[in-house]
Amino acid sequence: MKNTGYGKLCKDRMIGEILSDIKERPNFFITNFMGSSVSDLESVRKSLKITKGTYFVVKNSMMNVVLDQLKLEEAKSLVDGGVGISLSGEDVIATSKVLVNFSKTHEKFKIKGAVIDGKLVAVEKIKEMASLPAKDVLLAQVVRGMKAPITGFVSVMGGIIRKFVYVIDAVKISKEKAP
Image 1: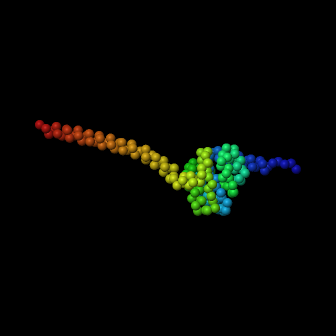
Image 2 (image 1 turned 120 degrees about the vertical axis):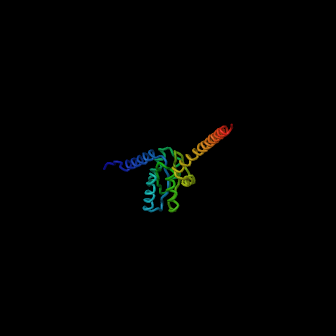
Image 3 (image 1 turned 90 degrees about the horizontal axis):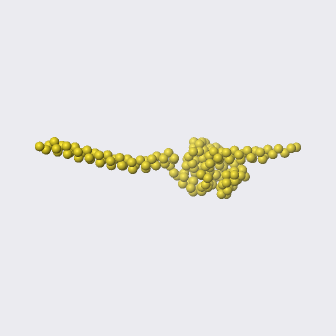
């Protein structure tokens, strides 16, 4: 009987799929799901769909190979036990909020860390990110902060012009009354 190596071929294909997903969406979270039910993991997936994120379970050996190929050796320390990966959508903060809120209500689901912009991020930082307002709210705050000085400047200039017009009008009235 000829050994065709389907097992290795299958593993290589799975590693390739994970690599292409991570290259497409490079910000991801590493979690431990041991003790969580299938329905719990499905509810995480449904919650992440809103943020355009995904969640999948991966074998530790395959994830270690992926991290090696991505040159993220420091993240390998987070890969032990039952590992789940959450690929972030466009908004990393929204994904972190979903995962942190889920971990608060499901004590067996643990966030171990994340890789954001190619750097390992600790759980504490992820919780801080989750407490931030949404991306749209942050952008609105920045715009409001940029707009405030301009609005103040326009108001001051408007006041100066208005007072100048009052002075000119007062001079005109006083000259009309003078003989």
